[in-house]
Image (cartoon, rainbow, N blue to C red; front, side, top):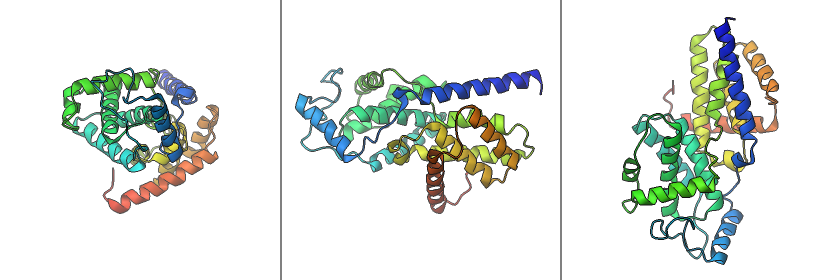
Length: 291
């Protein structure tokens, strides 16, 4: 191996070590905030404190009221639809699709702390995709462009106020590890000796695609599945799908173990089963190959 290859491999490994450390931080853990009990508690907190505004730190004239008598109808369907909408947005503006994963993390963490109605859910989702793009994308989109995609009742003032509310709620912890980032750093290390270029390229695309599907599935959030677990499960499925050499699997296991990750952990097996199900559902609705 040449010196440049050694340095490159060390960089990938360093990135992986950093990703593993970050996903263990409390700031990047997830909760089942769509459960009836969680939503009821959020609403009771609002009601008991007589907070009739969505974000107390934002001007009451800027962010609309979220006050209502019963708990909201916030549900898995809302989340799935807004996730699909975000993928359409990033494709429309030719942005990195990883931004959707980051923005959904922002949204999920925000909704753990705030009771919302449908209107405010949309505003929060728009603010999260704008914030994720501003921080993580070389190519930028403006507030006006984002506002134009939402309800006619929203203005750039609404978006700006909500953006600050989101960042404050997350404690400005705005660099979450993503499954796609794990995949992009795992693949060069485990595939460097594989001669089947088509198989490697196909496996990478499949692994990435599986993680993109997982972003829209709330079950990964409610079970607090780690990004590394989703990534490992996706890679294992892609290796099997393209029938890559068995040594690839062995090399992957060795690398994972060096990072204190177990390919056979219950969490990874659970992620693999769920990914298989959602992929099967997807191809049954759209049989067109993704690569």
